[in-house]
Image (cartoon, rainbow, N blue to C red; front, top):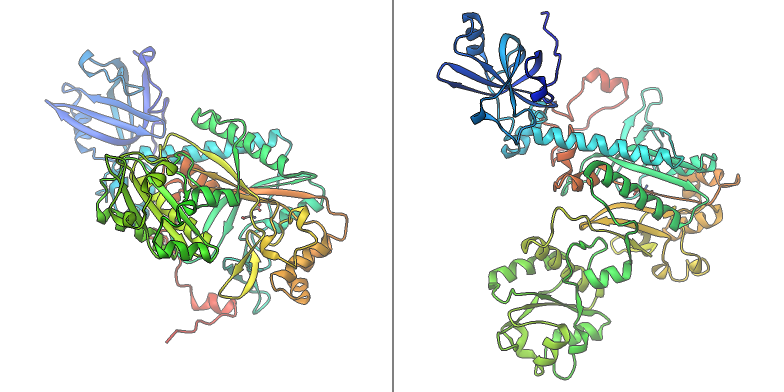
Length: 591
Ligand code: ASP
């Protein structure tokens, strides 16, 4: 069918266009009939224009207008005229004008809708994902996908301006699963062999530094086969960055500049030139988290000074005696919290294996009452020392492991931040967390493992004592956090093959295994590799926070659902027997 092509979009007509004959192409957004007159709002990516079919129009036009239903795709020719005063809509960019229809062409019809386009976000998630192409028609989704596009553009613009090359690395790579599981792709040509989809371009970007490219970036798709938990996607995008001849300062400064440019360009938000830096140990101590939400204070306080002769709570004494910690939180004005509310907070501490959440209230006279208050004979000292006020609630976690006490109370702090409305979505609180431990002890497997990844440079002062005390080693590692989310991890890398081999050994890899898995990297490092480092901000999460959303699905055009399934095209799906045969694969039915 020939159709009359648009001369303008649905978002651009203004009073200055009055008198022009125009053609609009778009979708029927809304339709109202009013005393023989039809008002049809036509929508496209650019906006909405009101089209009017006057009551005295030709019969053919009236008939065509009567046929129109929501989301029909149409071409409409007409003349731009001013709206009657009573219908001027200042909140709509095209709100001063309307188009008097002269011809309506139906380009395609729309079946009954599974949900109202504009209110799609109220529909159940699987419904939205089954009809994602309709969900994406809504203004809110169009806005978020546009933001994602603009963000990608701003990132490229900034990095290219700083002399970075965008270089693609392969997505069929050697499988070296560390941390998460790899997605595997069977090889038809080499029976029994597999490619893996990259969890990140880590080794390739390091090799690009060995190749002398100096500054590399890529909006890289990464794949991790993790159990569906929280807001995870099997594939996601990172702004992958690597630089040669740099120290931590160079990488941090680059990312601060990049974020500044990105937020200014896309949201008009001015970020501070430098982000605060908090060493990991301090972050755990003050916030009980290595990704603290800094939009509010309410820091964890040390309760140990009050666990003395004036305290008869044995559990508190025990925790300290065994080298642990007792941490407290003062919640302003929440002495009216009910027992149930406190129990709900206590449930959060259990996730981190704490034994319980003790509480006391500061009454109007400034004295302690309720809960654990009976264990303290000098309450005034506590109230004053913690800086608590009448009407405040005091929450305490004690544990013989300091990390448990801190993380458990940290979880309470973040929950309270949400419950008490302390997390202003319009505020962007960035911070660097630095000086992370290089290794973590895996209790289940009884071995050390890399806290970030095995290619991170230990800080220089630990180079001689790596093997002697792995738990004490700090890495040249940095995370960028934003509003309680980790949005980037990076590090200065090892470029000395001998040092790299030592790290492999500490995490329990034999030399032979290291050679088999990472021989190509060790080999490359024999040929004059430069000192280098980098970082990889998670692009989906970043855009999610910029859009004020809480799920990355909201900023991915075609995401999987929480079960790693696409309800729209039913993926993952069964494949033909013939395909399996070609790939030398047979499916074993589990009993
Ligand atoms: N490749 C790392 C990751 O995916 C980031 C980095 O160190 O650059 O977490």
